[in-house]
Length: 290
Ligand SMILES: Nc1nc2c(c(CN[C@H]3C=C[C@H](O)[C@@H]3O)cn2[C@@H]2O[C@H](COP(=O)(O)O)[C@@H](O)[C@H]2O)c(=O)[nH]1
Image 1: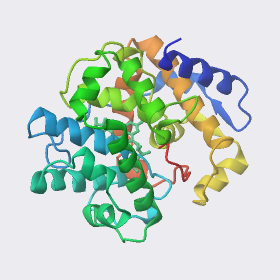
Image 2 (image 1 turned 90 degrees about the vertical axis):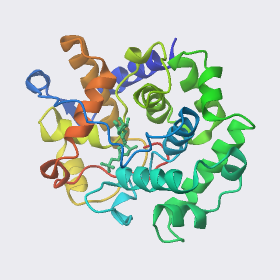
Image 3 (image 1 turned 135 degrees about the horizontal axis):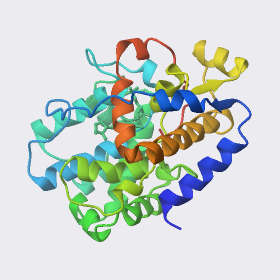
């Protein structure tokens, strides 16, 4: 069974037995998912050689987590946590070029903090440095485009390669970051991967929040109060139910609309950047998975 199909089945099983989260099916039909986000050539690194852009996409995806710590990050003006990290990394690429695999293997938390404009002792910077060192070890003497080539143009294989090769991708059951990496390979123009439309939604904390704001996901009172009070949720349990129910709801919406889950995800995540959506607290879990 392909990795995305494994995720689809897992999420359906969790959604069927969820105790804290319910999908309001009739509101799902009424959902306006929004529209495709515009390319952002300032906050992303798009304007370089394909090899350098590929290295950027891999490094950015290696640190595409930390939402549980984002309220403690120094954000760039008008930027969310993700965009703060993406923009700072793009600036580094424009100023000094890519980190080579050897440089990745030697990265310290202090260097990562300096690059991203964060306090040196920040816990998330140590995790980012660990993730980037693991990327350097995983690449060996390859560059990012070589990795895409090794996947033989198949999204499922690329996803499994990074899950097998780097522990921080082992978001078992949902594999959010392994799947979004595949979408980004195509999204950043690095090549065609077959099977992209079989990818599921990318189970982070923002898309489920957009669904909650639309009434599609309903949390039980205790869970809702905890999230609205900004209290962290431990990994597993309710946060896993939230992510599985969101993913399962998007599967249903995809079946009805014919729009691939990865496209619905992009529209909804982009919609989630709106101030009125950001004004309401979403669930926070400190994990390397999203
Ligand atoms: N489901 C889903 N989750 C996504 C993304 C992205 C950005 N990627 C796209 C952006 C342009 C390109 O098209 C990339 O594909 C980040 N995240 C997650 O969000 C969280 C951070 O959120 P905030 O606090 O607001 O920055 C964090 O867990 C991060 O892992 C996505 O697209 N879908």
